[in-house]
Image 1 (cartoon, one colour):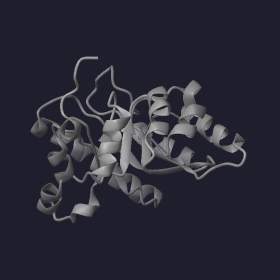
Image 2: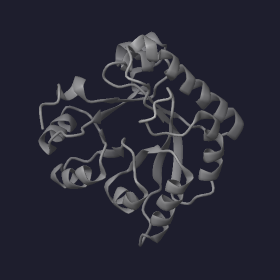
Image 3: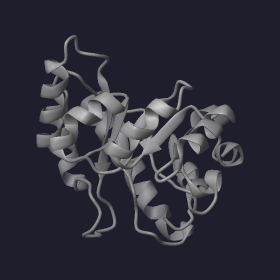
Length: 217
């Protein structure tokens, strides 16, 4: 990560590591935190709610998998950030749940997940619709949008470079249009994080290169 950042003219601290810990044990998460990781990414709300109490080390817990509206309240209890926001209805539900808390906690950090690559099985909002969703988010209490996230098709690293560049360019257009900082670009995983950093990623989600291959479950 440091080498990739340096190659693109940025300091190592410009890129944040999120440990993607889906199916990993609480002990593995604790070991990652002990090694210096401070952000944990989980794909499933219920798995994170069961795991987090077993990990005493403070960390930022991020939801990096799709969120159903009926689990919005659980997500607010289990996560500090939702990186996969892709529709207004979900945003409105999260905002209402935040307002109904007594007292409301810190605003929930969110990233807008952008659908690039045309895969029908992938979640995310189409690039042309991101601006409208961003505008609406600014009117909802309890949510703080910090940027964009994407998960491109599972192609060789150089073949996904164009998707990463597209997200970077979209973020630049949104900053100019809205005046918002939108500092976070979450893109890149174990197979392609170096290319993602070269294209401007400020956050990478790494699982296999940290924890090793997943065994049979």
